[in-house]
Length: 385
Image (tube, rainbow, N blue to C red):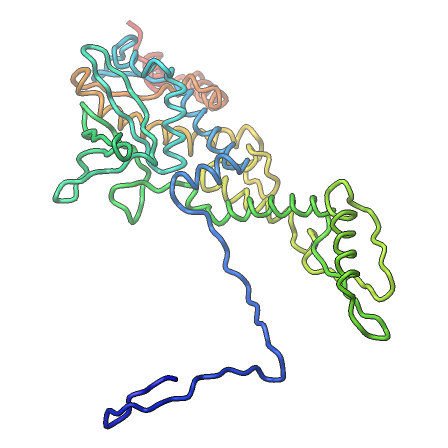
């Protein structure tokens, strides 16, 4: 028994609540489920993107390897240094990694998380540079909200590294709504990434299921009635054992009287499967700044040929990334190694810009109104002694 309080506040006994089903059975309503999206943290983007998606993997590797292969130059005022402790440090940052491998990891972190962290470790006169994983590093701020240090690791292994010339450096890509962390290019293409991965998983599941979409066997005999439990289990076992799996693709389905196959789903043609994957691939390549032609993606290629696409890749994607890193390293390491030191890159040694460089030299050679020293200055060389 249940009781309720009624005015003037006296207890009133209520009969137990009973629920009875009507004679019409029940109605089940089904709606479209919400899409599942990849999380936006570094670990999820690295696993779902770089480690699972071939377009992301190749885009990151192309940019990181091309940028890491660009040679460094060191200037002090107008003087160029051919040998210097700073150049030696960049050529061999630590005992485990050479300069190219170190920079490749740095650019990889920057592209996948929007942040890259470098720690300077000094032991006497020996100095080393080490990369810090973005998912294990957090920015620490002062009471006014300015970044002052990095908290590295978790639990007992947690330590604090100050930001600055004697500590660590944070490189970050522009983030419109975050003051302390950068924005990863892959986050802008997250919808395309999930679409591409889902298309691959659907295609694999389709192949495992005899390359046919899901369907149903409908039992509707003329005289009416239902399958017995024994008949139902036997039919289910025959379908699973005889018609499931890639090895049984194309095997004809034998139906007894009263059974009819009804397809439930879309065919690859109905889904426009190939074009959907290509469109997602182009969106991912666009987010990273890699021309789709260089990745072998068919579609609306906007470059006349492969050579033009390669030049655009270097000019619009690789060199701005290298220039940003050179400026950050100059401001961070320059004061510790000498006054007025400035790092830059040597564009003349980039093979991808060889055709562009040859065209510039041809134009300068044909310019009879310029002296030899003026021509050398135009391409970045010093005048002859």
